[in-house]
Length: 197
Image (cartoon, rainbow, N blue to C red):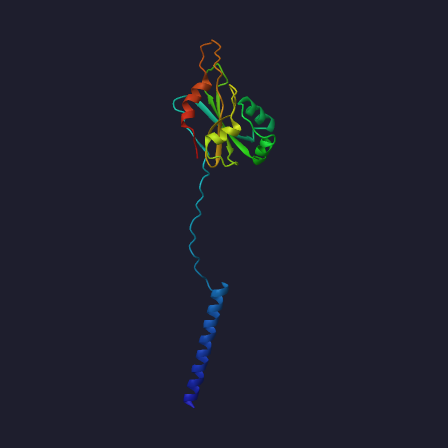
């Protein structure tokens, strides 16, 4: 009789152990009933966006501002520029070209001479996304070169992401006031340092 009672107690103990193990397993799978340690999560690394243009202003007093604008060329302007440079293209060439830049946003950097000057004193750098995949300055110039003196957008540099244009500061005119040509001073200081990122 005693042995029979021990067997019953042992059986009950085994059943209770099995039930306890089952409840433990179930709670671990579902997340109920037991407190589990959360796995450590690595902190998110947020990198600041890389500015597309690097430059230095040297010792020239300059105020730098940046803004965005729409793609700055029309088919008519590009045709006129090509004509001025005696560059020949098919009739619909510039329509196709401007279509590739649909929705493109230009970044415009203005470097203003911060002193007394006889001109507007602003040297500008305009960056447009390289949506055509130009790999050389020659390819870039073939489509966007300007042979006009004093133009606002001369092809200057290219990388996989950006097309860089700079303006022409002066046509050589001097008003005799003795004041400096601020734009030219800025251009001489900044242009050699320009770098596309």
